[in-house]
Structures are given as C-alpha cells and as structure tokens.
Length: 263
Image (tube, rainbow, N blue to C red; front, side, top):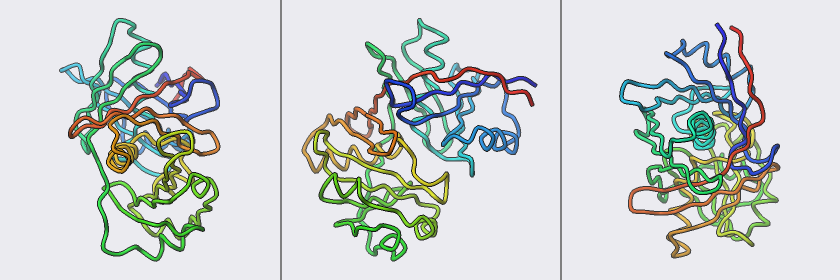
C-alpha cells in the first residue's frame, strides 16, 4: 500500500519554524496500530489522518509518537493547508473529531487559515499538585486547569523563557499536560507547552491549548482579539479571536515535504 504524506510547518511563514505535522489522506481508516506505527516512524509531534465521509466532512484523527491524541490544533491547520492547496476553489472545510465535534476551518486573504474551536477556558483548582511545582524551576503565581492541561501563570515573559521543566515530575500529572504562560512584551501573551506523558518533551507550537489560553487572557486583558507567541525554540505566531462559546485561531503554513509511504 502506498500513501501520500505531506510534512507541513504549521503556524509558520518560513520553513523550520512553527510546528511540523504530517498529513495523510485515507480512503478508509487503517488499524489504529498501523497509524500509530506511522506516527512513530514520522517522529513529528503529530501525524493527522483524514477520511472524507459521505457528507463531505473530513473525519480527523491525530497521533503523537506515543499515543492517539483527542485534539490537536497545529495538525488541523496543516491538514486544512493541504486540502486548500489541492482545491483552490474551496473557502471552508469541516473536520470532525469524536472528542471535540465539528471544527470549521476557513481560508482568509493572504495565507491565513482560521480554525473555529470550542472555548476551553481553564478553571481554578483547589489544590496545586506537588508534581507540578516540582516539575517547574520557577513557581507560578497561579495555577488553573482545563480538560487538556494545567495552566501555570507567571508575571513576565522572561520567566516563561527561563523556566526549565523537570519532565519526570511533569509526566506524573498524566493525563494532563502543562502550559506555562504570561503577558508578552511585544505580544498579548506568550506560552510554552510541556507534554512528556502524551507526546514528548516540549511541543513547539500548540494550537489546541490556545482555545484555553485565548479566553483566559482575553478576560484578563479585556480584549476579544489577541496575538500570541509560543516562545519555543522554533517559535510560532497565532492570531486569536473570541466570539461567544467559540475561539477562532489563525495561522500560516509552509510545505516542507511531499512523499510516499510504502507499507
């Protein structure tokens, strides 16, 4: 069996920036074990598999090198980029994933692609896990959580850039990951994302977590439109817009590779 695969740098306007994802369009689902093996072989933070259903939606599943993931933003952006490139007349694509439902993605002027995600604003917690405090070299001033991750909130961008994770401690927080965040110096807010239990060490750019970060900072900054920077080594720029129960996240993509998998 031969499968076409595209490697895309998502939330990037030039190669080797943003977060790389593999995108594979299938006629029907492969066994989960085979899709996991492909994701391990690709060794990117996510491999997205797509199957078009009779209604014209694209069913989407995401696999890290470690496991299947419920929700991934950057690989959804990369998938939309591949589909829009194949059909230049399309202006909108609907994805569907079991955990988050329908995800509508639109093509905008220029090279921006906008994703429509559910609002996943974090909530306060009664007790801060010791493993979280042990896992971060700088203690946060506040900790919240949503269905995906703990949110460790800091006062300055420099703290976000300087914090060093203890990945063995953070791994004990599974199934939750950890995002560290603060107001930005030249952007509305910045973040970094650690996910040793679900995908690896540090994720370069994490679209899904901005469905929680954007409403959190939108409320704190009294803004409905925000520009975010994920300050990983590769960096990634995200435009965020709040509208009721939805969070709109936009970014650009760059094609890195198109190839064939032979299995």
